[in-house]
Image (tube, rainbow, N blue to C red; front, side, top):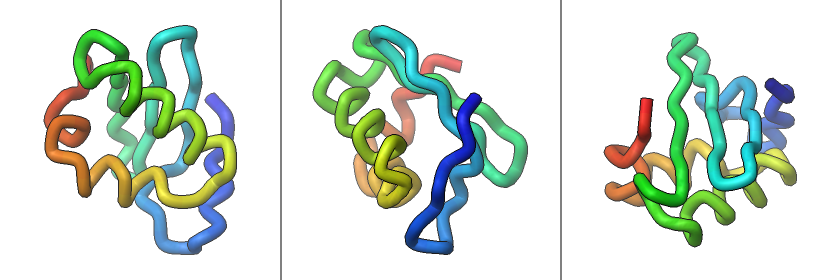
Length: 74
């Protein structure tokens, strides 16, 4: 997994890992959630990948989009 830059300074996200059709996100709690095209749709996964790469807004995106918050695979 790659470290999340956390440019906003208050993210719950610590690390992330992009897959071809998925993203895995590790939170401060140690929990790792995987989101993929099938569970939340391509648009959400690609948006999360972009936010992860710039290091800002990923945790907020996940918490603000109910389908994403509850759509993790594992």
